[in-house]
Amino acid sequence: MSRDCVRDCLAHFFNQIANRTSRDLAFPDGGAAFGVREETIAVRGGEPVAMLCEGAISSAERVRHLAWRAANRATSPRNLTVASMRQVAENSTVTSHNCACLLDTLATRMAQAGYGEVGERLADAAQAARSARGTWLHAARELTRVWTAAPPGHVSAAAIEAVELTSWTGRLAYADPQWSPSDGPDRPLRSPETLAAEELPQVTAGAHHACGGCPGLRRT
Image 1 (cartoon, rainbow, N blue to C red):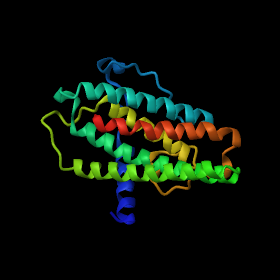
Image 2 (image 1 turned 30 degrees about the vertical axis):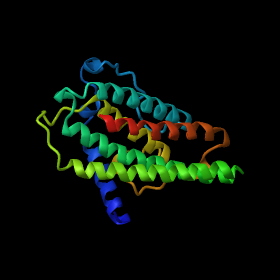
Image 3 (image 1 turned 90 degrees about the horizontal axis):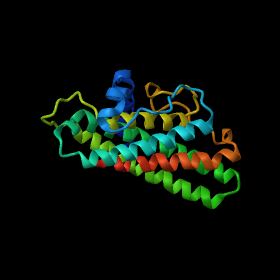
Image 4 (image 1 turned 135 degrees about the vertical axis):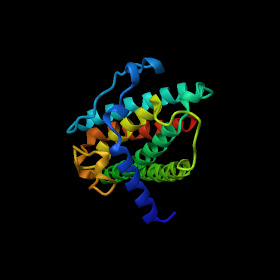
């Protein structure tokens, strides 16, 4: 797939995510039907880097937990809908893109701080995130041709949390503290120089957890 095609698909997915209503981003009955409670850190805008990292890590952990639960309940048609699968694939595409951008920024910052070997490893991780983005993008495109017998409107808890993870990683990757998916993929990225030395381990951990959260969603 050409770079222009990837960019067009990303812009479409950003728009799809932004157009989902707040009703789509709340757990029915506070999550009781899914065995979870809605104890999340709300993305408000302007959060310091440490809070963004905490939010990304917390969201990634919930994604992994909910994906594991969904995999064990996949035999129920109610838990496997086109809406859920598309939302997971689209958001995982964008989250992987955000992580790739953030890891590139970290690689540059580590090199600036004199940690060249660490920077090289982070650059490799950024490339792996781009590869994951391509895999999720392909899945999202294929899902436009998939239909199930289940009602199309139901969205799983894992799919809902995938939206939150996209928001947290976007706020880490982009320079605008009020960034949202409606801004698309072409906004200025966070400058390496804006990351303080003491923030580098936190941001690296946030990127690591976020990248690790998406693979589990393949089972949902």
